[in-house]
Image 1: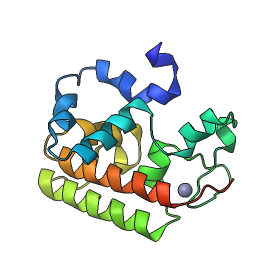
Image 2: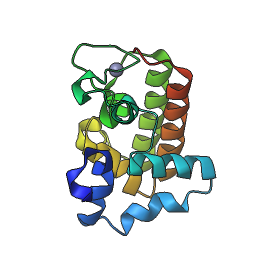
Image 3: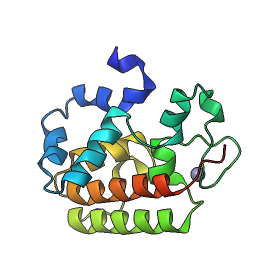
Length: 150
Ligand SMILES: [Zn+2]
């Protein structure tokens, strides 16, 4: 059941009222960026929270390859929104955040810029979907280039 697996957390939220708006990302012209958001939604991505599942590593042991902070889990919110362990990651996030704020006239991203609500907003807000697609695509590519800690 979709709502009971953490892998499909983002997908599960589609049923909570944003169903139509959530399709914004499907209209992205760049196929690579669109695919990155599909992977994010489906939990089919290179983040440790997912790859560790395949390798049967306990969730709390799926530490972040960028910061290796004790207690950090390399999940969607941590890498895309919170982690400060990699300069390129910080720059990608800064560019995406400033672009999203500029396009929407907001002073802060929904979900305090750091939560699942922020990710859902990136997927559903038409004005920022293209930039979010590029951001997620670039972060996944960075993950692919960066070895896991274990
Ligand atoms: Zn980290």
